[in-house]
Length: 65
Length: 418
Figure 1 (tube, chains in turn red, purple):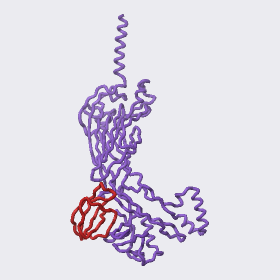
Figure 2 (tube, rainbow over the protein chains, first blue to last red):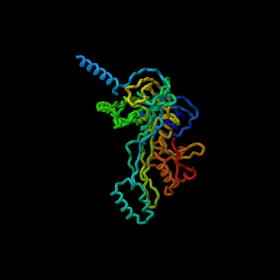
Figure 3 (cartoon, each protein chain N blue to C red):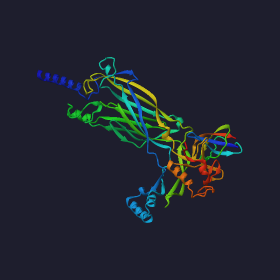
Figure 4 (spheres, helix red, strand yellow):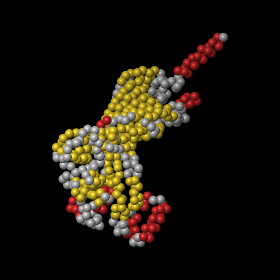
């Protein structure tokens, strides 16, 4: 399982999870969920946006279990 | 003929003397002396936030008008003759009003800059000294710059005040002049009724003004002051500005409780509010800005014994300085959200499932809401083995539904989110 984790004000949160590594730069995700995740191995960094702020990209980290 | 010629000569001399001795002159001589960066200093000695938005205002007895309060007390008195129940009903709330502002990214900041000149009286009579009691700061240009990395920007000016007057502004730039009264004491000189000034000179002096300019851009605010005769720019400058962080979306729960006759709280409604909080990867303890100052210093080499400036031999110095100053503390910009959970070892908090695969943090906009919600969760009225629903949303702990019966064993408490 792959996890997409964003960090804001020092607090990390898992906003998406997927069986495959679908995460790429420029994708948009709902940034409000706090999913239960089990991140163990860092995979990569991607630049995503939240739908509320399409012009303000944020750095997210992809992990896998 | 000779007599007329003598009168003409005498008149010319008198005119020459009068024009040379008038206080309309700015100085006797002026000379640019170069750079000296140690004559003036600036400090940001106070910066504080004002006007934190309130997300939800609770309705209770005390928020009503006087007539409504009287009527409500009469109704409660009829309905609850027992004193204990009556007091309990009086302290209850009966709904809430959502305030339209749910944006926590905007901060109103009041900054007080203190501009000082170095006063070294031991150099008073030294030719090479650069201090006299008549010295003044003639021109100031100071700026405050925020690093790009904070994702914080200046939004607008609200107010700008100096020792000599103040102006209200509501735009991103301004340029105005302030008239000064002769009765004031600009530059420390008393120009009141004791001053021996002619009528014309008084009229001229009454038009003295201090020039203020300011501009603001995303990451920089710039203030410029220019004092005319006898106006020393030394002193405090207050600037009120609005700052805005980039936004990050959050969902905050606002529970609405009503008091029951037994004194217990009953959950009557749950509101989910979309809130914007500052977008910043980390939360540094202090946010810093770069304060820079350029100035022109008017040193009076001789002639400082008089208040008037026309007899001054002036030496001009220019200087600059810059320093890093603290702008915000962590507590100033972090939203004070609270959640419910346990922090023994690893931190685990309550969440809720809104739809399949979508879980959200159960967070509250203040400690009181979180505390009351936790109290309600532990109410024995709730069936101990049934999962807790918030409307149609299921309450979760460590990814699984939680029941009121499991609450005591987990020793839940109210925790800060950040």
